[in-house]
Amino acid sequence: MNIGEVASRSGVPAKTIRYYEEIELIRSAHRAANGYRSYTDDDVHTLRFVARARNLGFTVEECRSLLALYRDKSRASADVKRIAEGHIAEIEGRIEELRSMQATLKDLVRRCHGDDRPDCPIIDGLADDGPQKRC
Image (cartoon, rainbow, N blue to C red; front, side, top):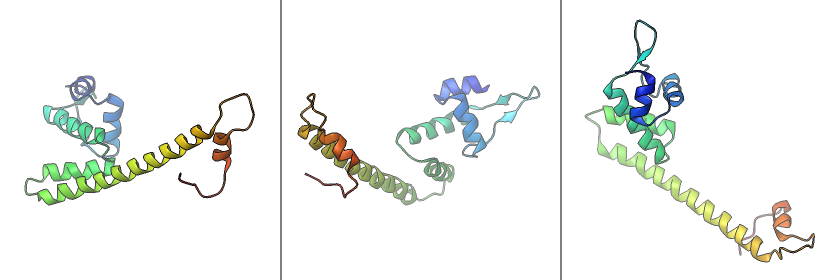
């Protein structure tokens, strides 16, 4: 099948498929005599695997590791779990950062009168070079 069909069946845009081939995340497609890329059902499955992993926030390098483990039938599930647990820890860290940002912004908005005066705690808070204060 051609790149348009594999893109449609996998849900991965053709441009992304070409990128994944370029960085060798997936194997390069076989080229037919006419020069067009030719893909298999296995390629569709691999692209769906990568798409699901990317949708869960795994990096390209983590996807590379997960694909290697997927292809290794003698893999230890502990290796897969280690990657997933590391990713969970990263997500939890980002959630904490977002909660901190939310708390800071809520405090700044709460302190702003939102009237015609030029004084604005939001602007002052963004311009402050000092350490961030938590309320």
